[in-house]
Length: 428
Image 1 (cartoon, rainbow, N blue to C red):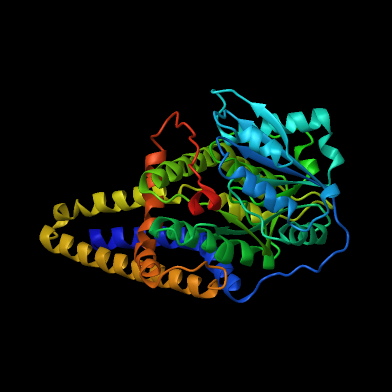
Image 2 (cartoon, rainbow, N blue to C red; image 1 turned 135 degrees about the vertical axis):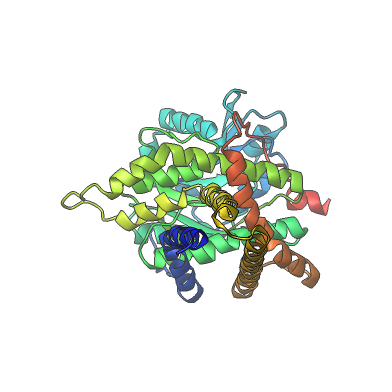
């Protein structure tokens, strides 16, 4: 057996193990295509605190608050809390005018979203008592809640006996604005249809993505402790490590405004990548320990979800690039073992190109399938814009790999707000 054959077998085995570790993603995706979980309607209406963090969101906060009060849920069962953090506009004034209890928090050294939540929950505990609520909704200032959203989430939350967090379907309010917002829209459709839906149908935990979820008040009885660049990943990892689950309600749909420019997209997704990397370094070891810790008698069986989230927080892009570079490096030594260099590199180039074309085609077709499956939820988007988005979709995902690598070397990344304009501003 020659040198190149040995290299091929070794790396074939490594890539095989890599793919097997993530095989369950494909299983969940297939299940999500064909099946979903529905929750029976309940007459009981629980009491919720709705938590909103807003930084210079005067253009959109009013629309969100109006959508809450017009949601059809009993007003006496709701208390809306807004933390206006590091604002230089009229966010606080607008929020108060639309019926929210507003706390203002200015600290330029604590600009990350999680710090705003931490401060707000301290205020709620002091003034109202966090445990006086049945649960808390985490909502973003640029979100819109269609009528019935809160009731549908209440139904799912009661179905799980108020023990678990429940997240919802994240759609884009500006899906058809341009190709960039369309790409974001597909990205979140994929997370809901191919990830969350299948996991919940199988009784496994999914993860929260940004906002749009409700959680038990007991989760914050000791305050909010998630202050990294991606507090949603941090929250998810901790809850699953503790044996809790995060379930998904497909019928409850909310709308989120997405970036429409490349610079803002790159800034946001680099922050996501860096935050994801931080969560890996701070949470992976604990998840692995919990995975191999015997379950206590009467305890919650959450082992597969712990495995799932442990794999999910791996910097897969960086690992893949590292393995690829190592493979290329070893192939470069092939001429020392009597192989003709030109033939080796031509063969490698052909194989790599074929793999790229195959991956690109499958990814694009998957995006097309997704848009077909969720066609009723996608706002009107022109044919050519859809086509452009589908052609760019594989590159949009490939960017995750690049940013995973970059995030390993980025230090002291500063969180900056994503500019939002809202529907009223667009009409004006």
